[in-house]
Image (cartoon, rainbow, N blue to C red):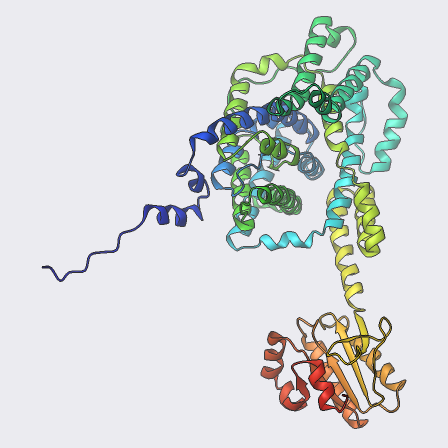
Length: 588
C-alpha cells in the first residue's frame, strides 16, 4: 500500500467562483438555466426596440451624427455584460452623459465635425481609463461625495437645459450657441417667430403619443385584461412606433422638400468601424475635467440603478467591479466610433421587467442593434429630427425632481440648500462648473452642520440606569456633578464649539466639582480635538473640577491610550457606563 498522499482535487465549482470575481459573466454562464433563455431573449429584444431611437436621439443631443449613438450601443453592451456585476443593467448612451459630452467637447471643437467626433471618442477612452483605474484601486466609495441633494439638483437643472436645447429641433429654427440657460431662453425668444409649424406639429404629436404610451396605455391594457407579459413590450414600443410613423409621414408627403422639415438623412450602413482615439497628452489634459465628471456622474447613475434592481432579486453588486465593467464599456465605445456610455435607468427597469435574467439579454440587444445598422439604416433616411427631439424631451421630463426638494426642505434645510445651489449653479454656470459648485457647497454645508453638534446636559431617569436630555425629560440632576453627552465625533471644525459649551455650562453652575463627558456617540477624535481635551482637562483641574469620560468606544479608547491621554487623565476616571460614573461620584 502506497504511503504517498493523494493531491487535493480542485473543485471546478470553486475555480469558477474564484474566477468569477474577476470575470463576473462566468457566474451565470456556467450555471445558465434553460428556463432563463426566454426571458433573456424577450428582454434583449425589447431593450433594443427602446435603445435604437434613444441612442440616435442622445447622439443628436451630444452633438454627434445619429449613427454614433448606435455604434455606442453594440460593443459596450457586450463588454459590460461580460465584466459588470449587474445582470439586468442596460448600458448605452444616456441623456445626462450626452449633455456632459456636448458641454465638454463643445468647448474644444464644433459639433458634427470630424474633430468633434475624434474628441468624443477620446473622451470615452479617458473615461474608460479613469473608471478602470478607480475600480482596480477600489475607489468605488468616491461616489459618496456626490450627495443625493447634489445629484437631484444637477439632474433637474440638466433636464431643463436638455429640454430647452431641443426646442430648436422641435421648432425647426436655427439658434446660436449659448453658454447659459438665460442665453438659450433669449435666443429662442428672438427666433420663435420663425418656427416651422409643420415641424412643430410633428414634434408635438410625437410627444403626445410618447406620453400616452408612458402614462396611460399600460392602465388601458390592464383594464382590457391584456396578459401582463404583453403589456411591457407594447408600452415600450412607443418610441419605435413614433419613429416609424413620423418617418412614413415625411416620406409619403415629402415634407422635407415641401415643408422644409429637417430629416436625419443618410446613415452609413454596416457595423461600426474600428477607430482610434487621440493619444495626445495635451488633448487628454483638456478633456480630463469633463472625463472626471462623466466618470463619476455616470458611475453614480449606474450603481444606483444596479443596486436598486439587484435588491429585488437578492443579488449582489460590487461597486469596484462595476467601475471596471463600465470602464471596459467606455473603452469599447472609444474603439468603435462611439462616445461615453453608462447604465440607463428606464432601459434597465424595462430590461428587468421584461424578464432579463443574465447578461445574455444585453448581448441579444447588441446583436439586434448591429443587425439594425447592417440592414435597416436606409429606412431612417426620412426620420425627422423633431421626432428625436420629442423623444429626448419626454425622456428627460421625468428627471425633474420637485418632490425630493420638498421632502428635503421639510426634513433638512441644509440638504435642500445644497440642492438649490447645485440647481442654479448648473443653470447659470454650466453643467461642469455647476456640479463642482454643488459638491463644494454640500461639503461646506456638512462642515457647518457638524461644526455645531448636538450637545445635551443629561440627568437620571427616575431610579433607572438611563440618562436623558434635561430639556426633554423629567430627570434627576446633582448640584456637584454635570453629565454632558456629545452627539457627534470631535474634529477640528467643532472642537471650539464643544469647549465653549462646556465652559458656559460650568460657569452657570458654581457648585460643580465633576464633569462627566459621555462619549457614546463619538466615533473618532482628531488631533485638534485631542489637544482641546488636553487643554480642557488642565483648565478644569486648575479650577478644581475633575474631568471623567464614560461609554468610550473601543477604537477611540485605543487611540487615546496610544497617545498617553488615558494615563494623563487617569484610568480610574474612565467608566464603562454613565451609571457607573455617577455611582462613583456619589450620585445614587
